[in-house]
Length: 235
Image 1 (cartoon, rainbow, N blue to C red):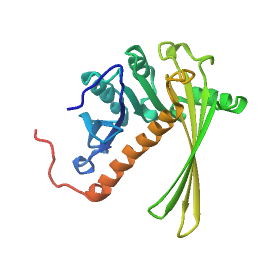
Image 2 (tube, rainbow, N blue to C red):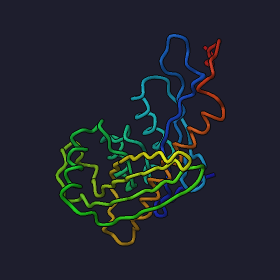
Image 3 (cartoon, rainbow, N blue to C red):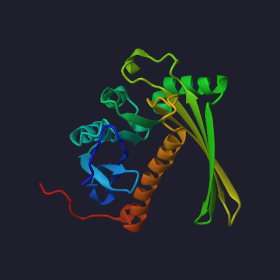
Image 4 (spheres, rainbow, N blue to C red):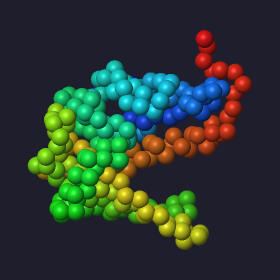
């Protein structure tokens, strides 16, 4: 019952979840459910599935986005989905993407780290959350990359913004500390003052929340410990 409007775009997270109990004997992977989940309330716009290597998730999510006519919306995804086929599809439909940037795009990641080292962020933002025995601090940094050079395969992607997020976690009971740095890239032009930067910081946080919810389901349903004697697929 979700209605999509190209003018008043909504945020959706694309995320895959492997059904551990569906792994057949002799196989390394089982059935994977891929969903488009609305950030606002966790409602599912649509879902699809695949059986195969992790790389299969990329065309699966793209096809799901197209089938639901969601490419004109605001999409968050993890670094697996940072590729020209995905970014160009969303950009050409006048949608917005915020996608993780990791070592699977080594040259692009190196270029963006160089940019961060040699430029000051346009905007910074910090949050502190306490709960479940943890204290979590997040520091967000926004950089304008609209004038950077990108390889020609990104020509129709229109990269505009780069985000750096430092997450610092403290376990209160043991005083153990951990820190993680993550990078995200977007075609969102945040020099336009009608588009608040904090909205994008919140989108990054909300995408992480969707991934955590999938982990919670794994634990609640004990799927990681489930072993089947019969195939879940009907031949």
